[in-house]
Length: 181
Picture 1 (tube, rainbow, N blue to C red):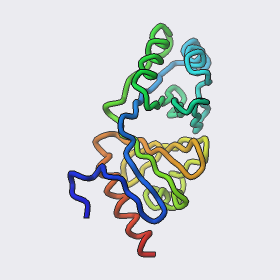
Picture 2: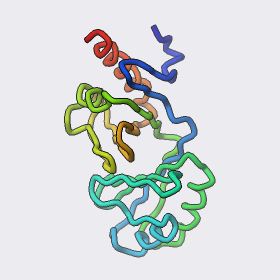
Picture 3: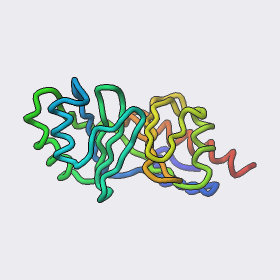
């Protein structure tokens, strides 16, 4: 039994590993026109274009992930506070968009293992399962989550900080069903 204070403890069960990505930095890039000056500034600062609908891409060095959230919003993730600060500085002058730092408001869970799709289906349904290079917004454990897959067999689950404990609890309980099967 996991004590309530230990809810952040990694989970290893049923050939899956779930762990909190401590220190992950997140920001939303909001813009009026996906082909405008802000989009050009993002491309210049990151070397990548804004992602297309449902797309999630990772930089060549693996230090930045961009994920589509809506027609006028992209999520940026990086393990480096310095990298996020550099991106923010590069985008500060673009008139038709902005970067809003969400680092204190989001938690990121990394899920790896073969039965990843089965877990996500049980938590939210088949529409919750991203293919590699894809980001899917859905409800897992009845809370809004963005699931990103930048490589096969691995997903990042982005959840509002207020719901992270709830989601980890549901994952723990759901994996008990996996072990009993």
